[in-house]
Length: 622
Image (tube, rainbow, N blue to C red; front, top):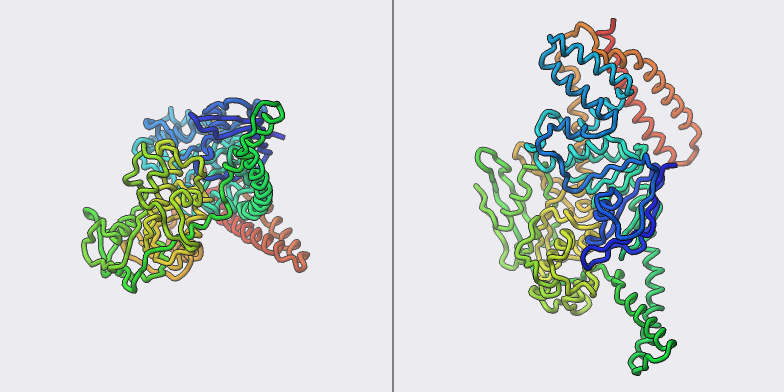
């Protein structure tokens, strides 16, 4: 069995110790979700496993032929390469053979009359046979297509950040290593691509470690969760939902243990205050014990008070109203005739594909940007807080506590009042970190601090632009709980399914044709509706597609496919028959019935595709 073992890993960056005696095992075919608040070192741990950085002590053990591939949040691809060369940039013989074949076929398609190229094609096909690379090549094309990577001849340097991320993701998936390390793999993917990736990773034969804020994605893919907390690794069997349940039990047990430790601490503190002289070995040992207890008690974040419990400013009946808003840039109209009435407790999600103007509309609502047409009316009692994608006005040399105190020294909460230090603790910053200069924080920690600063002003309308970016799942839970208790209106731009399902009661959908739709449903239901509509619209197109011009003969690859397709059809029919038999034996087992029905649907779709392909190939088979 191929597995990776981390033994007693320790790592310090500057003054901050991220890992102390960190140990875990990644078994074969495991799908692990790596979780923890920002600053605990999730990406740093990925670097250590990938060999990009070295541990101060401890080791990672795995077989010599164990291959690891890493997808960072910000991929580093050679700007001068084509997409094809970037994707197939590997020393693996199969990948090299695939790259050579695709390069030759690209040349051949441009000049099919060349005798020299015809000979090179034949030689490349023989190489593919010897390397047994046809299936891998077919899988590579599926991966590229599903991730929306169409132009394999494009130069990497001309691509957008999102396109580069998709190319980098395709590269690591095509490699099929023993261990995939994926840092925020769903960023820049649309809904269909995310659903495909979930299915791909579930069936992936190797192991996977995933860092993601997409909790639905973690729930669908993970078979185990590892939480990094105060330099230690806590393992939970199951998916994200199982992790939440198990973590709640663990923290309840820890809280009981901590209450006992606090009682002991009070006794030890009383002894210390009596001025005991540290002369004897016994007294020195007791002082050491006190210091250990003090450190343990001091490092414990008060996790049973994740609710911010903040009160908002009074909000009148008149909040925000948009009337016939239109906006465009240059010759492109983003949206037009947007009409929206925001009420005191509105929960609105703004969604749409990239480039439809979601952030632009939010800026118009905040009166940071003027519309081309229409008016924005904001009530006199409205106190806006705008959580933008860019952090504004944060001085890196300032200490965290000073930054928050600039907003307010003390604020009113549902329980009475809370100091700036108490609010930092409630927002997952332990007391021991409050004097830390802001420049030492991770990107996610800065976002969390910035969010708290905005909330300290006690707003009554929240505008959130992609709030889930760079925020860990625990902070998102705090934010979601705050929004649930918040007495004012919330308008958020987001692509995070889990977050939108929890905080948005209706959706403002910006479409590519500049039209706007308001729907009264949660985000997941809307996405499901759109998927069904796409399928329905695609049905009649089958009869309208022009007949392709007949080819003289099948290509080499199509001949191989024609020789094997009837066996594949027979296997698919046999699988459906077995599933039908199994369906007759389930009794009242609803979960089993649901699983079999899902498998039946997939098997029937596969059979339909095979028959359609057989029908096409049969026209040109000799």
